Image (cartoon, rainbow, N blue to C red):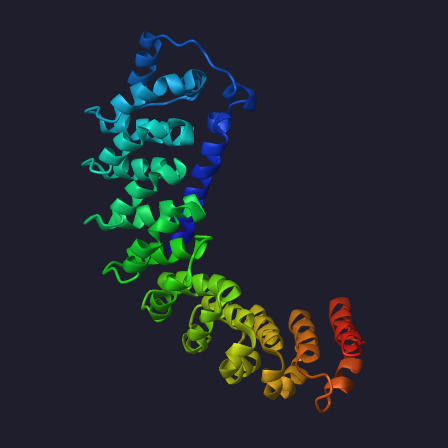
Length: 360
């Protein structure tokens, strides 16, 4: 999906900001060193910044924070490559260079797209102090700016909770990439609240698969934490038939976490268990039925049949689910005893676990 590459790049940048000594394959000890750089030396390094090499990177890192004022000045260079690399280096310094936040915020208005993107990336590495600037960027008329800013908030995590209302609004953006980025940001934001649920439920029916995936992922996260996630059950039932396997899988997971309050999804989960061609999906639907528990007793016949599924993961999940629902249902006990002779050890263990747990 489109967001995967963006997220990978963002996470890589976060790693670099935490491990400054690894830039350009530098020895870690080098990042701990400081040098008494003169103003002329710093100026010379900045002049070369548009075409960085290993030696230059070493020099900049040795100078560390002494280069920050010069890099801030470089953000206004007439050379776009200099401006871009200056933002890049400030981002690599992370929170140590947070004094540059106002200048980086101004750089969000740079006429060059690459420079603006580098500024957003740099702000993402400045931690919570940069959140107000990124929230402001979420309202930019530039769709790329809105999208990139949403993704940048992923890296800040729970400290960016104040951005949630703006991200929720972006789920209705006219641009699909922006909606997708907003959904992804909400999904990966550890402090996501129930306030996002109504908009996420609507986004679960978005025409764009990346938006739907971000939405179902976020609902999955909420289903573990808030009881209000049960309001998403109808939309999750609909998502069980999505053309995208990852979306169907996350929908089944969310329904399982919602538990007994997802009882209305039992018929749809049974259908998925019986007809979905994806092994992981059949296994996950069996697991979800088991988590719903006694309210899923109508699934017992389908789960008994699943004990003979060609894939051991499905058989194992079915065995556990039967134990969670009703081991005394017609044929359930005898079939689980037969499953103790399954060719796969994990399936045998799951059957044994259900049989033992039933005696407690």
